[in-house]
Image (tube, rainbow, N blue to C red; front, top):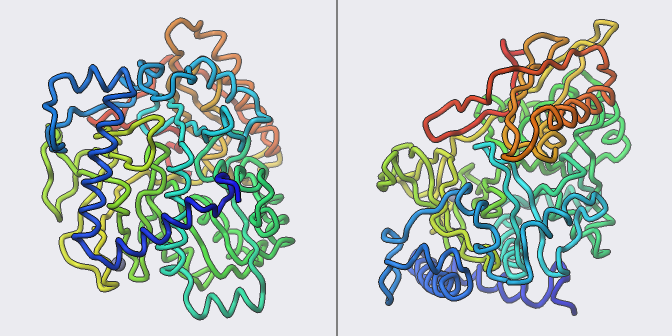
Length: 466
Ligand SMILES: [Zn+2]
């Protein structure tokens, strides 16, 4: 069995480890966290030029997490070639690799999974995951998520109707959720036969037709994607009966959850993660997000990076990924607001539970030349715009049913007019695909404006709400 198989030997070992950790309770989780952190910090110091310098003043000996200097995305991306621990990797080479669309879902240097993210601060990031990190993620999904999400009634439904997954995500790029699926499919694994990718950049009627045809028993998408499907189901155009609904990449506020669950008459299961740390938390049977604390450390902190006690929302969160060695993420400012829940969960899990006040995307409603409403997911626009060469940060604002205002900032060294030509072209492509040639794309002279002190940048929205 090759180590790159979706469920290879390495994964099996990690599944067993995840079970043991959960059974062993808080102590077993903490022991793994400490041990993995020690090894990660030692590895980063030995193999990453960036961390060697960054940790110069850090004493040798046992690692005290609270004394480790914090890192930010812009700092790490600026020092990319010094940050990585494999000398064969350069930022320029990874950028070339990513620029070729035929590489989506393929591994860089045959051993690293590449993800790109614009992230909530608007600064693009290129993230590499090694095989151990992918194996750990897969193991956690099998050992922890599946048992929480698939009960007797789901098993019965899968046995009678089959397992058919629809992955409703942005395609074409190197985005986390899709990239994991594409990678598995690329290797000819079992996933290819049971899951189909449905791109959110295609017009909604086509998405609906494809799903009606597929009759999926599992639907995975962003929260806004599920909202869109719920509205289509309510209108009677979509007629599916999924057994399992999985939400990732955006927050799922309670009123949206209720709407989606009422429409499909099934519970929706949420995950929390980021491309930097993969999926950090899974929802349990009781609707709480439990952090996989044996593989990821989340520290809720205030404006001055001081720890925030349980029950209080943080200003940001410092994340440490204990699985990935190729690009160590250690006390990385993720920018999300989270609350550590103080009381134990009824499910009995020893893993800490959190609430996330993350990004929520609204569906954008435009009108075509005939005056008919056309829904577009913000993710569909963001996914294509994000990868425009030379684009540093941007915001897209639907200011009227036929108008989209674009604020943007080029990367240093790029000419704004050149970047604008590309940005406008990719936006027009998405609009044309949706039969929205009539929508005016307007270049704003304003720079993208953060909405909070942490520098969080909302990327696509309606003003006023559509
Ligand atoms: Zn729980």
